[in-house]
Amino acid sequence: MIIIILPTTKTNVSYVSRMNLKTKWLTENKSILEEHLKLKFNKPQLSLFDYTIEGIFFINTPTFYMYNSDLRIYTFGQVIDVITGKHVDPIFSCFVDEDDRSIFYSVKYPYFRKPKMIFYEDDDMDCEVDKYGYPIKK
Image 1 (cartoon, rainbow, N blue to C red):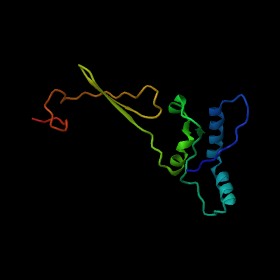
Image 2: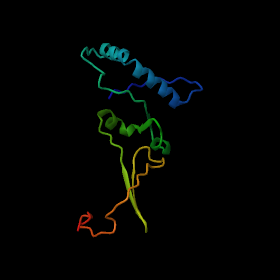
Image 3: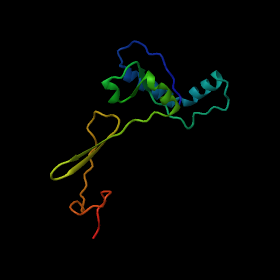
Image 4: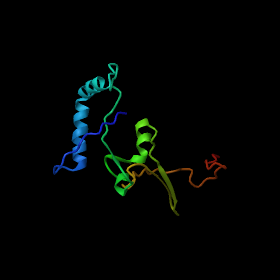
């Protein structure tokens, strides 16, 4: 992953719109970026072929918005994990057992949007189960 911090300018365009424009330009001109990095760091073998460009923000303290933004927002405390590729978004699981059905939610980033619902019918719902919860076929 390569992170490039570009200066922002004061305009009427929002931060997200500016970041999207910059990300789009870098993606479309990856060869120019690659050539620049080769010269700047004196690494003629450098290649960005396997890399993707992603616009992200770093902030001082966590906010509610960072968990629901279209663009990723990380705190400065997460920088090293993000750069080294060790950052993993948590996935929250919730099981709701109602009288007539059971619902399993798997909530991924962005966290505060309506989760994708998958419904299925279980033919073995009323049968006996083993100690692991798997249906015992008769």
